Image (cartoon, rainbow, N blue to C red):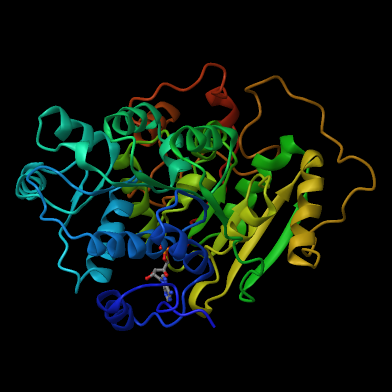
Length: 452
Ligand code: AMP
């Protein structure tokens, strides 16, 4: 059996790992640690929860210990770039925990807070800097940090950094580093853009891929509706009103799709919040804080943005669109049914998604229970209404009133008011707004959503 000792880690790290209660390395740790210790670049495809932080932090601490140097003012030996302050802080905590007997110094740097304590730590000199790209470039610009002595670079959640628009910042930072360095690159997904970036930064890397767990918790009840694409919004509104009335995450595949759905739920009087890569850190934090509150809005999320969500008591996951990768389905529905609690995962599957459903069922090695009979042929699309004329609730549904959930006002809002409240100053795309008459003409059914 592989042990941390057999991977080549020394006593100070083994003691720290024992204190953390880690007895066996995770697969990514077993694969990556010996190669990182040997100085090789790494291209890791791994999601949070696989133990990837220790997979890079442990061997890098070991490498710094093997060649001890006094930390020079404003310089660092290891630089870790992460997309968000939450992740940067978690990585900082991990370095401190694993390095507690190593006598190394680490500093974390991110925006949105005073830079003074961060620059004070850097001035003294540290071994490890964990940073979000924007604030790091600010400090470099002020000559408070000098990256010319970096020996080890880690890019964590590179796909999320790209998604959040950090590509130019990342490239600027990498251009400041010595060419002769060891680089460890992690991403949970591998779109072409990520591969391209990785190949521009890595030298003959070892590729390590960890597959996420393929078995969802038994506590999650799964089901699928076969439905025409144009009917999905109405079905979602119905589910949110009648069934999924607790803490609900709705997944869309794209940022644009998330925003569009946010507007549609808003029109239907359902309080929602969206998180995706185009939202600022503050917007995402606000949405998550609201989602954790006892009266949570429906959270609309893209896969990449949802990765940082660690919220207990998610009662329902709704797949408004099925993901391309079957593993992503397992990852999505793993947000609910945690810690022995029950949860439900409901998927809306249209014609084009039938093959994705087949791939998911193949991965799960069992069919997902169907809520309606699948059509033998293509699912019929109803007659196409003029764009912008369909209410989000669909024909015959109760629409046009706030549910009272989350707004705290308990009274109906006019559309423009509601939109401003939901979206700040963002301008909606042209043609996306339904005429107000379509949403206010029907008699609203008073159905208040249950608070948790
Ligand atoms: P990560 O994927 O780095 O976010 O790690 C996920 C969680 O797994 C963290 O809470 C770690 O503390 C924990 N962890 C990492 N490696 C191990 C291990 N070998 N044994 C037990 N827990 C671990």
